[in-house]
Length: 538
Image (cartoon, rainbow, N blue to C red; front, side, top):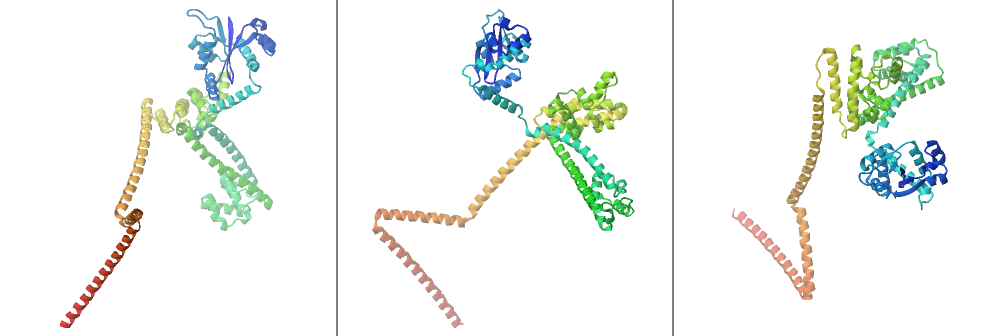
């Protein structure tokens, strides 16, 4: 039976025929040793067909399909044209060797071409990959490497494409840094306490908080200089007047030794560093909360941001966590105890990282295992919703949290909880209502914009109707321009005579104005004469 080899390169599909397999041997070790020698290997394996890719985009699509174990139409056409045709009702007298069994099974399902993938075929394909540039004619040195580099970059870039707001790597790094900061802040604050206690040992018993202790150590510096003048500053730091007075009284009767100014400066600087680390830890926690609300809002609403982030970081990603069954999620973080129990045939652990949730702490001792199993079930549901849903909402997480609360009440008081179907229906209704609210808000905003535009247009119309003065001026200007244009046209047509006539018309207008003024003056003089006659008659 003839053996054909399918090789997927960066530049195209290649089909090779291995016809003299007996010369190199059926043993994989014999094939492995003969692959290096091109003279020996070239006599056995020969190129029968080569189908180059049309473009870089086509190469990327073919590479994605091959990596997922799918046969494209181009590959199917290439195999049907290149391989020997099989008559209906007869078995093929050849087989196709492929590197990936998944694509081999898909090829067999679609085309009924028998495929095989074993160590012998893989060694032959390795030899084809090693000497591929020698089999293809007109291939310049370096072309295959460029094609491989370009396809590798485009393939990895396409695989890494994601939503920037839903990057779970940032959550993993943030929770790791948060844990290390907790350890560092605790160790550094203990060092501050031990260092400053040589100078002021009584302060340790008064102030228990590490951040406040570092702040006080920086503020007080030398205990001998602490007096009533610094009482207001101590009250601002401690928030308690009694404690501030107690610190001042303890400083007066302190048994600590004096420190040199250089030692006090070093203590002050170190206390400032501890304060900066503590403040950065608070900012990092706020950042983690905001990122968890974007990436896994339902998981954060159910179990909390810190525990949810620890689960994601331990699983590797949100997708890996969503793929885990609830039984795996329940003991996630307790792998050592699990394998130790399996080895010693002891009791397996009931909970892992989810033990840090408040629900398991609130449950009674006999119900902790049940509560852990139920909580892991709800966490797996929430992680799958967060991973595969397109819309980010906390409705499902809130409803799942209510279910866990009801389960706690059921274990303690015997109150029957709601069914999961009813809870999920109500969550779906809440999501639908949120969508409708968003749509109505968008429509209302659009209608408000339209109303504002229509109002502005109406105001403009009113101003045009009411504002006669500016529009009348413009109209007068336009009329004057039109009249001047008409006069110029008339003068162009009629010549000088018409211009003289126009001058006469202007003189007549001036005479009419003078006559009207004279008439008005005569009317005024007549009115004055009449008034004088009335006075004389009286």
